[in-house]
Length: 207
Image 1: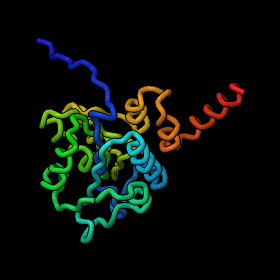
Image 2 (image 1 turned 30 degrees about the horizontal axis):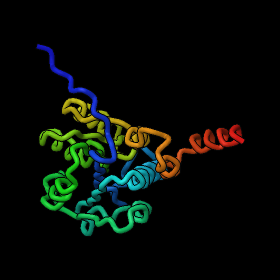
Image 3 (image 1 turned 90 degrees about the vertical axis):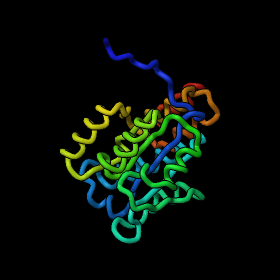
Image 4 (image 1 turned 60 degrees about the vertical axis):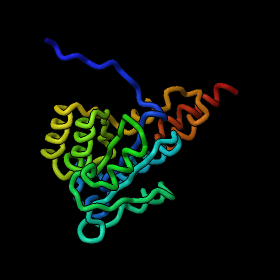
């Protein structure tokens, strides 16, 4: 019997939440698949767009004071008022406080990003699948320490049923309609220069 494919159910502002895992200064220094500047840009853009789209956002660190340091400052600045949950567990979903925060959102589709991709993003995403939730990973808002780790992490998530994407595609899926009043703010938050250029051209032709 062929495996039944579930019908497509899009991400929306009402069914999705964002979980940011271990974007910490110490871990950032080991990332090799993205430059520090590019990774910071992508994570901050994801966080800002998620705020514009009214997604619940959970932020967590591991061993903040003993091993891996604080969340990088640009991300903290982008998320004023959002508490950062520190924990000792490797899998963020194993921490009771993080699990309660995720459950409290009431959302069935969870978007994860983390450092490292194959552990901090993959483990809770795979756990979410096991709990009957839909899990997405923003690959370009995650990072890891070698190409082998990256490929192994991507393969493991695909095998578990995690949906892999990039941060902008996930946010645009939630936006859904460029006529929404939030559209301009979402594109500004994602900080995509080409989108701004297209918008400027469109405005020039409309005059």
